[in-house]
Structure formats: structure tokens, C-alpha cells
Amino acid sequence: MRTVTLDGRTYRMRDVNRLYQEQRAEAVRRQDQPTLFEVHEDLRPKVHKTAAGRFQHPTLFD
Image (tube, rainbow, N blue to C red; front, side, top):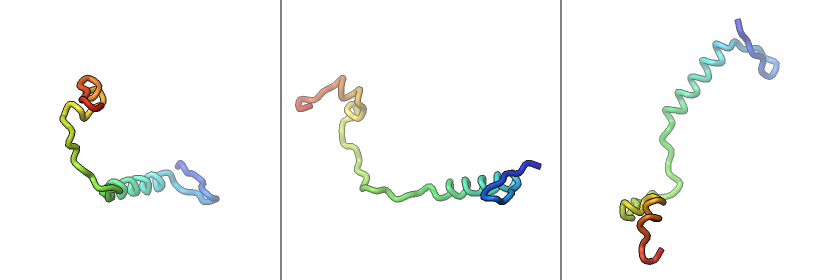
């Protein structure tokens, strides 16, 4: 049986992997996080939403 020693204590790898999977599952369940700033809708024309579009179709004041 494979074991690992952490801080002087011996653990079975099977138990460590099971705890890791439980932690990952819990992290996936807690994905919804509040935003730091208010999210605004991008009102630019569709062409200007990418850098390539802004380069290919410059506006008068850019």
C-alpha cells in the first residue's frame, strides 16, 4: 500500500486522493463570486470590440 508522510504523520494515498477530490468538488460548487466592479454593457460598434477591428476601421478621433 502506498503511503505519504506529512508533518510526521503517515497517510494512505487512497485517503489523500479522496480528500483532494472532495475539496475540488466543493470548489466547483462555490464558483459564484461577486464582482468587484459594476459590469457595464459594451456599447461600442461590433467592429471596434476587438483590437484588430479598431486597427482596420479607425474612427475620426482615435
